[in-house]
Image (cartoon, rainbow, N blue to C red; front, side, top):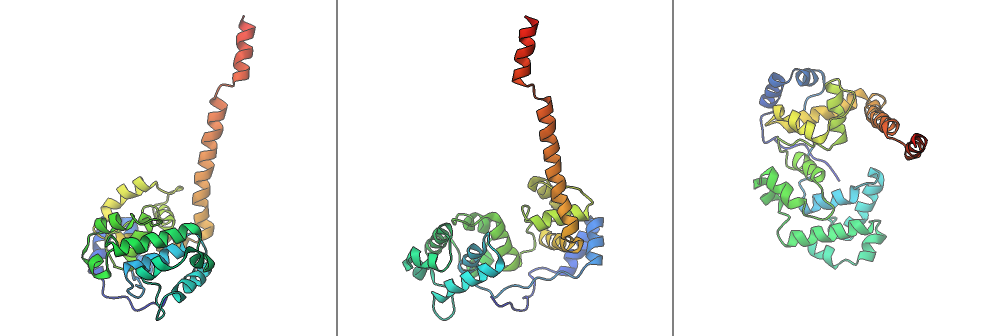
Length: 255
């Protein structure tokens, strides 16, 4: 999908960066050392179209997803994806032939129905709704989770205070920025991110930059450290756990 120049942000970026820098010394250094915050908002499709594309891209490579989504768009008119009404009329076999899994077919059908029912808002309605209300509505769609909605809030609506606590890049970027050997748990990142309000989107964006700057070789060690820690705990538990065979033998000998 083509990209356009990012629209004017719905917040003052200079104020946001100054506020974050004043609250967080590590983040202030990261802001100073890396490129300036910017987001390229894709063409302002409706939430229905944006979420349809997100469903197509789930759990497969970007190249494969782009091919499949192009086939889905070809089932619509004038170069646009099928409307909700058209989507409901499409036979599942036709969507499967385009490359969608059965689960994704059901997700797109549910998305279409909930758009018709008014649960999925129009773009104009979405722009007037709070982040919390949008998350609550959109995650009711089959196959749509909180992360997908958070990406919609950031890159489609330009919302300033979104923290994707389950995002791998944000978690690893946090570990790099704050010198940790492990990724934070979602609740831990949620609590830590309170200091970034009301500009958690900007902070998250810089966590992504920290992750990219560190490189995969360095950031891969973070996940390995976690796996090793779990393995060590498991081995310790196995050593400490009494073995039934030995217990019986000892009881027999004591008799």
